[in-house]
Length: 82
Figure (tube, rainbow, N blue to C red):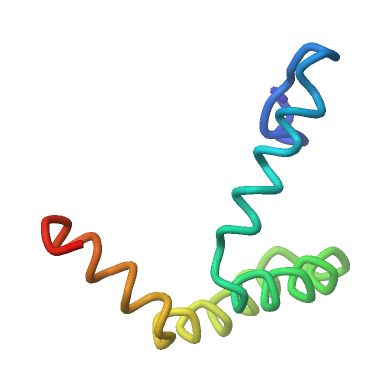
């Protein structure tokens, strides 16, 4: 964890429930975010840091133009209307 290789460390008996929580979090994400993230993660593994950042800069604006993004921003700005 200190090296940034994992997000958290849990006791063995908590591993499966915690993994399920992470899966639920991923499933709750907008579909396009996972569709974009998987290929990006695979491709940047063999890139320089600068090239990986360029790829992220290319992909990120696409996320800001989706319906899911607009709905999330509306919820954030007008929580009482939900």
